[in-house]
Image (cartoon, rainbow, N blue to C red; front, side):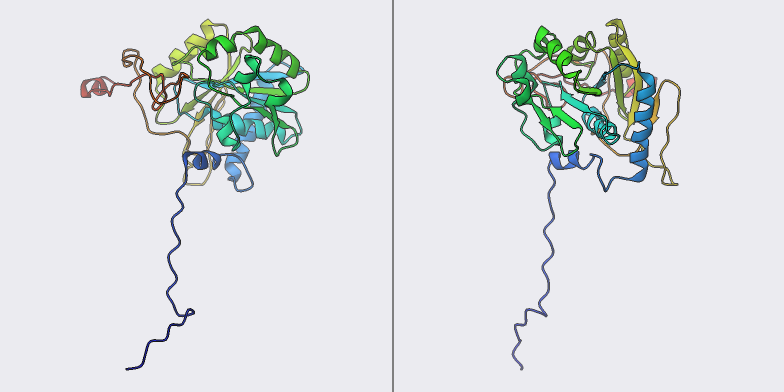
Length: 302
């Protein structure tokens, strides 16, 4: 019997190892770039146009981006809106004011500090916390270290001074904030910046949760300039849907996580978790709500 020849050219190639993507990798995949779908890019351009015409013609236009509950895609939409405005040549500053569970530094693949919290407590100067992105006219401020008193810091005089100083340098200031129904941070910020865009996740955000969030903001004097419906599937023609009305948009891309049930009586209390000394919210946040599963009787009533 002939001996087998060990020829590397005839050897069977090994299967490539499967790349395991982290949560940060999945988040960054949603950021607008050269590989983004034409339909998604056009949807953001439509959103940009409607935001422009929804606000007064001030030298610097400022607005908050928030949601009723966690994991509904507000941070990703914040970044994509900022990129879309920066592509027109407008000077944009994107600020992460979610000091409880920030995401902006993950989306830009940077360290969280120094950032907003460090500036508000006087540990860092303005030049230290403002960072430059790969887009020439887009700057951003990360959250910084997670503080034990985020609501107090955001309602401080020093935060108002920061906004007053940077609004002379930028055409748009876009602020990512905490979910309205979980903590009061966004309501506090709306006293200074009343214009708000709400993000809702398709097949996840419930009407009652969204209504409660809107009622809280309007009671505080906020002005809801629009809604973004996130996670909408493409139709069979490969397009997307959006309709006018109260600036109600639908566009492609699936962000966020599983569906959740919401009810005013469905929260059972607070509890510290593994999120350091800061306060968090939602599913795996440190200082959060526990959600009850809807019973069959509750589902039948719906």
